[in-house]
Length: 330
Length: 254
Image (tube, rainbow over all chains, first blue to last red):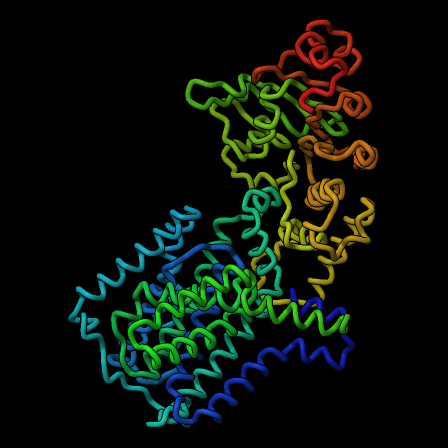
């Protein structure tokens, strides 16, 4: 309810900041990164895509409290369907995004109807199992998916007929940044809506929500499906910007990394996803460059430190600093 | 008076254990009925059965003449069977006004609206504030529930129940866990509940029961042992032996 609170306390001239301010911050950060590191646009594009993916987790886990370690199922579904769409139907990218979103939503809805009847550890294990089943199907259906080799040389036409994907990845970067900002904008509205508040109520206490008349299961399926759509968009973007899709897009590692990135940034808030992804990616990048064999150790330590000392993640830390600044020095 | 809630032969067993057996009960407009009985008598179980948290193994439950046995808890709540909890079940990280908005969002059918709509959001917030006002909770509207004193949390629980515009209200020990100094506030609130609203109250505090109820049902081992006016219950030697007498003057379970 961050922006509802802002709308009430701040004068009209700063209200637009609450309306679009965080999105502008994302644009500014993205552009600054691109200007400072023009040779790493591929890396920054990957951050944008994982930002969308982790935002979908922030919705599903952070808002609705659905414990899942299988979000890659929806990412991979989006990737493969967008790739197949481009290879066999149309190389127009925006329609590919739509197909990716629909695939992610469809897979989430179908699996959610089963998974979301369970809770806690059972739900986590089932979500892992479901993603693994999809992975195995993609592996076996080699005639469609390319199996272990994946799909390569995915064609992508110019976006809106204007922006052709270039060798240096500038269009890919801009395209994913715009999509990230759109997704963030939509999700921030959703969090501030009655739907979002109901999600947080369900996360807090399902029995309480039944006793206020909320159809808890239906609500969970809807939010899980929405999360699937956003993960599907991320997957489609990955297919379009890298022009390859492999089995790793359905892999457990992606689901787990999403959760780690969200935990580092702060589970309870959307901005946590956007803080956690670049932090994780940059630290991993640097650690892997320093020591290609033991970089996972650095990530592990980082995660432990976050969980022990920053239970609200980086977002919680920044929030604390901001409140302290506003109150003034003591 | 029009009858709103009727139970006929409601029975619940877990394996061989009968926790409710053949319970008949009727609540009409304006009824103030207390449900008493020793710990483990099945009082909360009965509320769970009526509200749909548990399904009855046998027997019928009617609300306004319509059978509700097959409905799940959310649907029964929306139909007007509203309950509170013995131990506060609130969303502790949400503010008071957000907690009270949750039932209003359901009543306004806004739960699946996924974007803010200033007019509608303001209406919900306004109605939530109006629910808090008579309970003296206006000052803490924007505080998180976890920061509230337990007595105030009990009032939020009642505010949520009233926000649902109940046809029947099931209160499960509304004063449980509240220090004696504050229980007067709860009693005040109970006394000011809408007159025509039928209420079934579980309560251990006999003072509260005798002041609030016009009819008392004594539940023992899942079955109704006795039903009558507070005076009849107080005069019944068997009940005194089983329940009232055991702890002296009725503060059983504390």
